[in-house]
Amino acid sequence: MDKLLQHTIIGAEFDSSDRHPPPKCHPGTRLAIIERCKNLIVQCDGKEKMRWVVGGAGVGKSAIMQIVAEEIPADASVFFSVNGRNDGTKFFLTIAYQLAVKYEPYRQFIRNAINRDPSLLRKSLPAQFRKFIVDPFIDQHLFNPSQRFVIIIDGLDECDNPKTQREILGLISDFCIKYSASPVVWFVASRPEPHITSFFDNARVKPVYTKEEVEIDSDEACAEVQTYLRDELNEIKLAYPTLRSKREWPTGLEFTKIATAAGGLFAYASTVVRFI
Image (cartoon, rainbow, N blue to C red; front, top):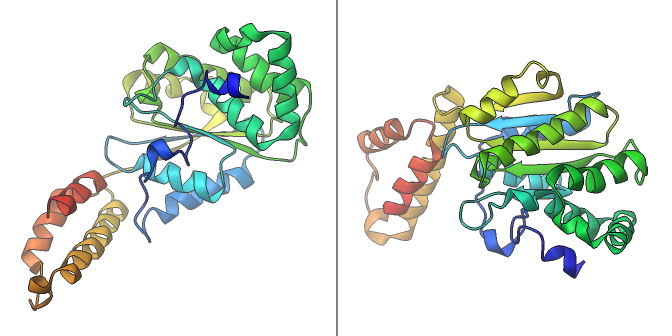
């Protein structure tokens, strides 16, 4: 396990200290999206075991994936980041390590496989996928097919190589197509980068995934940002005696200006709150 750990993306899991405190959804927001993601695990059938959560920068994709990972909880997760957690060649080894930590049959399988062939830690992504995903879940039948195993990939666009991003997506989608009875459910969150969008637009891939678009201009998103702003600004008011004495702070006009500028973009609203 220690040898395997050295070949993983350190700090990429959802509960890692490297990401603490992680991005979180404000209480009472993003409930519908989170619920739809959780329902997929129960309702998915056949090939459709992949969900693409897509949205621009700052819309809160990582916060949504964090809540999903915590509440399910996820069996394995990789939160990519340009800040040192972006080596896509270590992706499947990272997943394998987390699964080995949680499940004894898988841990024994991994131990035996690496003892037989230590070079597995340096194999190509397709070879690692075959050994660490296809073999245990399909060929060896280590688990009950009725179980569900949830793997979350956040910030795929922050993986260091676009070709690697597409290779990972290709391996996962081919797996869903070929092994429709697989117990593995995949969540992939990313920005709508052209090479990722074109991959998901492929007619061959469309039957295996559902799309969850996190919009910034919808009425729902704008209302949730306003909820966040009201709660956070109220906390600031309560923290300062000079503000508590004011009958109205911020004024209705001031709040409207901030809310209008933010629209449905949580990143903008949180930046304003930190500045204030």
